[in-house]
Image 1 (cartoon, rainbow, N blue to C red):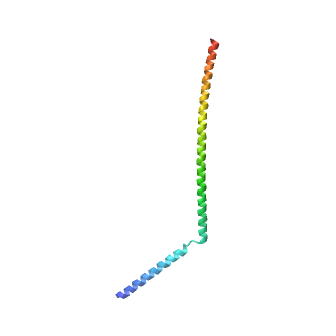
Image 2 (cartoon, helix red, strand yellow):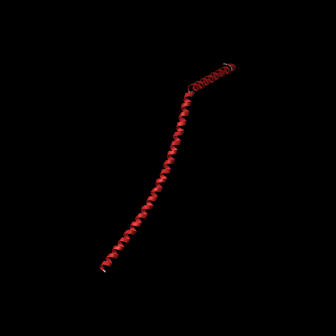
Length: 108
């Protein structure tokens, strides 16, 4: 095999490899091509996902607002309870003082 034959054989091998690579690329593109129907389905799924995320965000915001309202109501109720307990304690103390006074007056 002389130099010219070697160059021609190498060129043919490279051309066949190029052709085979191009054919495999074309075949893969042809097999993995997305149809218009599939694109429509993907767009619909994307829209549905976006709507679901918006609904989730709205639900989270509602829950946070509701939790803040309930926490505020709980704090107010606790403050009212403390005030009522203080008033009850003062009333019991005053009633006890009045009983003691009445007992002292009736004995004396």
